[in-house]
Image 1 (cartoon, rainbow over the protein chains, first blue to last red):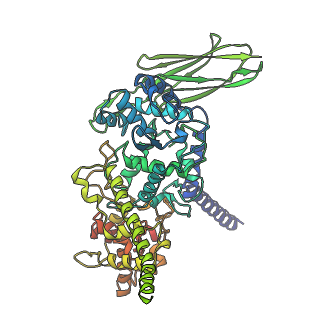
Image 2 (cartoon, rainbow over the protein chains, first blue to last red):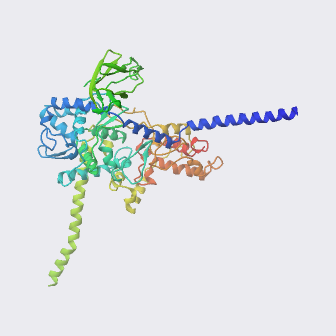
Image 3 (cartoon, rainbow over the protein chains, first blue to last red):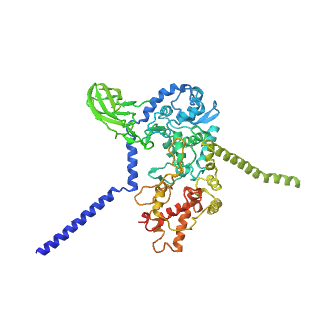
Length: 279
Length: 108
Length: 220
């Protein structure tokens, strides 16, 4: 009886021990998340961020004062001097006084030269004031946020019947597909095609899948949690161009207007919902 | 352009005894104590320390914060409303900054 | 009468030629304008001017939105051009160090410059492979390119056959893809790392070893 009992208890103990080790191993495996699980958690985080008040709205309040300070109530955004309700929705458009197609930020830059006495270099510096920084309370970002928020609820409506705008649209579309630089990138490397893809853990929108381009741009300026400040469209172009290993992007250039015309026209019909929020 | 600009949002009207959500956001860098990677110098923390929620001049909620709270923090607190009045929030930070903001609420 | 018919038929034959040349004119004006607008928006510093010159393959690839839309002749032309643009290490094809390869695969730095900050150091280099590929099991990666988990195992490379001529030929194929992806997949989204000098031939040997070596974590 004794020997059998000892043998039985030994076997049972070893089984329990093996079971315990196996359980611990399984638990360790549990803690290692699969890529799909990690991506699901990132998307959950983004959803939670969208609740509540967007800190970007505070920039809009600052923008109201800066708008008057720089005499932008004299600036015609296409609907009459100083009228900003719905202005973002019909930009980019052709402006006969500047003889050019302009998007919102380029127009702000032009009006700053006309009505606030800034030189082109000063305007560029003003626009780039918060680039590369964190928690930067820039007046330029505030102005863009204020004007963009006034168009909340309006649907994007770029007039492609205007021949100048159509020309800029075509140029922007060709640039989208122009391969350049030491990594052979173009915008279409990431943002075109029918196949749904992601870059690391971020889902990519595509200009070829209907509605996605509009959803991506109708929320700009977008408040970024990682930099605690809003990001305007031209800053977004600059960051994309830096990641493409191209030389530094110049804000308020024809390149910016061409890209904006192409993107906003592709997003025609999307409701504007500024500011967006993201990582 | 300032640190400490705040927004407070409450529903305009509420029923007596209803629990409403008071939403607030304030700009503040909330920097934790750390060493600057470029210069090697110690950067002291700059963060909000206290948030007080007052309902008709009665302290209803007090919240202590440290440097672990994110920059430009958004905070939402539940509040049971009985009478119309003024909801006030008051912030303090560790460098002596004090900011307040009020909002009116009507209770039916 | 015959003379008139001859002149009339010549004119009618000439019409399509005139139409085609007019269209070509319209298109070629657009191309220069497109490049002018593009370059006007980027830094004019002469140090970066070489980055803004398109080589012939880039010019061909820019004309079409994807490889599926390209005619067979253009696809062949790019493959021919790129097959000439591959350089090998001075010691030929050999099994390198997959630890070094892993560092380059993980690194997303190298080549990014901006005047407002956020620039990579000139000594940074990497392939940023996880942006588009899933490589090691459990490490998050992108889905723009094919999955590379277990690549060496799937390719049939084992300790026994890795040093045979067939094994080295497989290593050479992967080397060619990483060095110049367009030699096998014209106008692919994948950068031509070796051709542009982003990675040296020895770096690419190390990365290919990381993907194919039986001991590498990719194949465990």
